[in-house]
Length: 164
Length: 117
Image 1 (cartoon, helix red, strand yellow):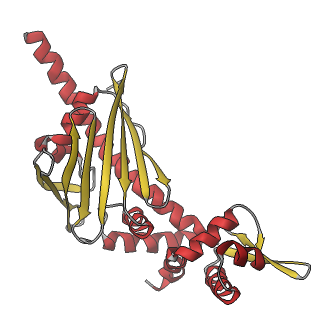
Image 2 (tube, one colour; image 1 turned 90 degrees about the vertical axis):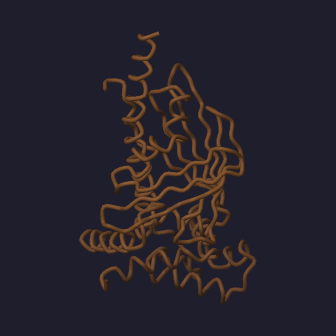
């Protein structure tokens, strides 16, 4: 794949409550949008390398629900769901997102698909509503789960101890 | 998890909104307590209490400048927070790498379909 993008996602904190994720893809925005909104395709990428997706449901209409569930490689289940608020095919999606383990915290995600010369820049703006929720999301890596987060704290602590 | 205690405390220390404000202020440079009291519109005992928590986890250092005590941000102690941001970045990077593969397949399929037309 000589033209594959393989860049890192760029994550930036914005204001008090937002996270902005940006990534360029070597594909038209039509395809990126399709991969984002077609359950069979979402199943293949959304879990990344962290596990297997067991459920990908998408009711792509304003007011329609989506729900993604994955089983992590450590064996725990992680589920997210939300509602579509705005749909402009190939251009823009606005939907809510709830991590089911923390059902009181609802984020609003705005996805923008911008194409130049056959390449697409995807931006995902996650508005977490409050700073506490935002930072909690950053901390959990969204779907890493608390156990892995605790392991991570421990690992960092060990590294810092070794540096000292 | 005993080894993790101090690091976990850094998160706890930084989770408090007022203490974040103090860190934001100190990110712009060193400040004496009185500056912070003024900028935050808090009573001095409260500011001192927050500063004590931040000092205990090493997030700020205190320096003696003549008769004034000046506070300074200690970036190293905030490394775990930075690492967590990177962790989040990695989650999305992995996800998007998997998406690259899906897109590559879709493109090949599109090309094949175009040939058939």
